[in-house]
Length: 423
Image 1 (cartoon, helix red, strand yellow):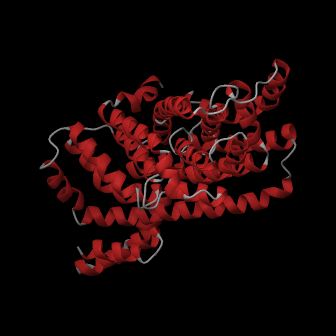
Image 2 (cartoon, helix red, strand yellow; image 1 turned 120 degrees about the horizontal axis):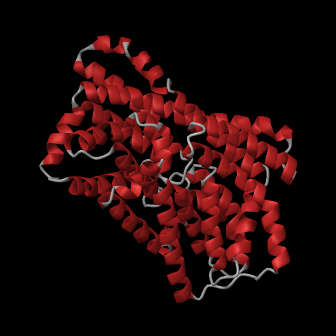
Image 3 (cartoon, one colour; image 1 turned 30 degrees about the horizontal axis):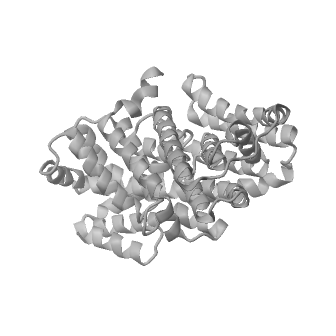
């Protein structure tokens, strides 16, 4: 109780989550009276990041920096426009599918929303779309970032759960595709109701020129995802090659990337990666304290009084994680909940850890788009000026659609493990 109270107080006064985890762990050691545990604390802190798979995180972040600075994102949007821009609500579909392509490179929801909102929302406004809807749609499309591989959240989960990073990345493919399809259905229905405008139709020559200009950019996701799925490279190696591919495409094909930009890109990638890795290190200490205090066993005993079967347990987890995700970012949310809930899922209910990981990540990502925090809405608001509260109301159909996917993922594990079983 003392540890929980310390954590909540620290979080409410605005202390960063990583420090909250470390301080709460030290409070528990003091409260337990076993101060010898302090000798193991630095070892646990270092051990949390002593994992080869975590090298993929700064590399994935760097790919996003290079892609944005090298004009790759714009080419992806133009190519998507050439294929589907002339449909009713064409720019809304372009926004969604461009996000899907960018997600296969970037892997971060907030970074993706910041990039795409700058490019798509002004263009949608020019064509007659409401700014609030445009910004809200971009925020929901940003959900694809942490789901479609590569995904920083899946890398963090794989370390916490001790499952192969490649398995988690493969598991995110089908849920990401299904989420895109469900969002397309929502756009089609809303387009019919609100009579969204059609985009400009390109001539065949224009389409071919745009596609030819953008084709080399597709090498980046092809290299990253293809090499992982084919077993040629592990996620870290694929990310390293992806960085090189992004630099070469941005510099020598598109010509917008200057080598003088790289130091600033490396610095930004390093700062963001350091934040994530410190969270992972703090999680190792927090998990160690939880196990020492037998917290998972106590929570398991309570959960079994409510959930009698795996499906009921997963639906209960959906509610718990969705509530947590509304006030805590994705990676910290994983760090707080996985050490407690995963042992219950695997040992008591026999749930595949990969399946549990996919449901947990999708839940917490949806929390990015739920009040009172709604981080992706605030990012979109900062870029576009649209109000976060109005964004949530206007885009409620997307929220309910994502909840439907969550229920399906909880009931049917094959939706999470399909590509894993094929590899």
